[in-house]
Image (tube, rainbow, N blue to C red; front, side, top):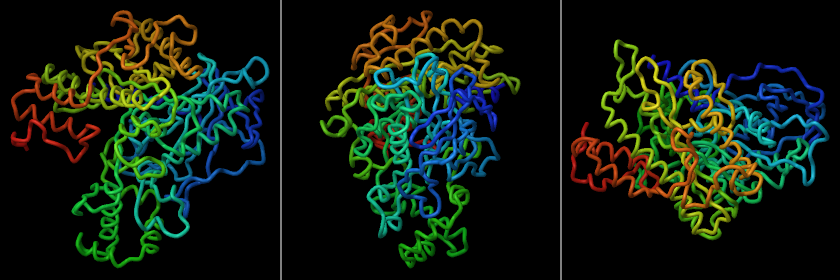
Length: 597
């Protein structure tokens, strides 16, 4: 049962709706003629027109690997857009990723596709003043797993009269990778940035600008929105100079401001300015040893130093995508790899502190921004951990220490709120953003199953707002166990409210009172809107903001976390997650407390 409930969490966090059949029946009424080429789609489960697997860039293969993406050429024949395009290369994962054997890379480098969802218009395709707001979804998955096709945008499109687009972008070290050998003659500043996944998103927005009018969307009213790593990418795009003018509003769901430096990305771990354990230099040493060109780390360094930049670049591009990815250490079951990514390098993203960039008058796009987190973000990650949840009679999950479990969730989720919502919002306000709106998602009405109170164990965990925002609770048999007849009225009403606010923000730049003007007024930050059913207090405004340092201090002072050593172990874990301190860490009040093994 513990494994089954873990699957519930994974499915919901990944919003892994059942994949469409390889080929759907074409609907002749869906034919459209964008500049990219004539296209015909199908009708999805939501009742929306779906146009799946539309290429927005040339395949980034061969010499195109680790270069800025290039626009795709116009296709000549009418394209039957009835099946998803390939997902980008990644390890298999139940976190909204791909099926497959653990450790064996899946997907394809030719993966830069997007999907368009529109209402089935009763009359002509809307145009001019009647064109619909456009919402472009950037999927999560740590920027290392997932695909846009896991998210059915049709329900939101139909319910709120929108055009919804979901995109793929290069993942992991194929999406974010820097090495001096890749900055040779003929490379552009964008090529040299290493931010290829971010550049993919920007080119996808170019495709939307140039083509979306043919589908009834307004190219002058585009909202980017995404969750988790996708929310972090949204905030990156708000900061990115090359992305400016390509979107007009931005929504970050459970995002953050984590960035990697060029030193993280490129240096050896024993350099004076240490690099990441999976930096490009460290990966090259692994390869040289694995290929028999060196016996150990030191001889691999010597061999690498003897190679010219052209030889290194050829060596890098000579590996297959699967072979390349499999060099990286990864979690055997969920495909998550820890790689440097989203580089603050000065071309695609500004150098320095992301919050400082937001607080600067010219450090971000002047667009309305909506951002928020879930009250129990970290329960997604605490619940599957046997350190916190035990099995009674081998199958029944029980919390080992409910007080400690709640304390760990509260403080880590509060830190996520600080770094993913409250502090970025405050910085944006200082920087003159035209509208900043913050939320917290509190829904926790999961059932109790065989004595396991899922409302307590899972609650408003990471990713749980996605079905409410997209209006689709059919996430597969295992995940659907959390949706019951008892919680159906409340959650469906809450979903309607959330979709209405999201759509009104997309339409006007302010969530206001929702699309129909019948909801509580969502006021500007620093106040924030709480999303819950009537049983949990309803949709309401709150003033309970928090900062990063306050969240860390609260954790250190919490007696529920145990003695000094136990509290400091939890404190150090939080520091490792924090935006400012990051993995290099700061001991703070725990400097004199010995580390436990």
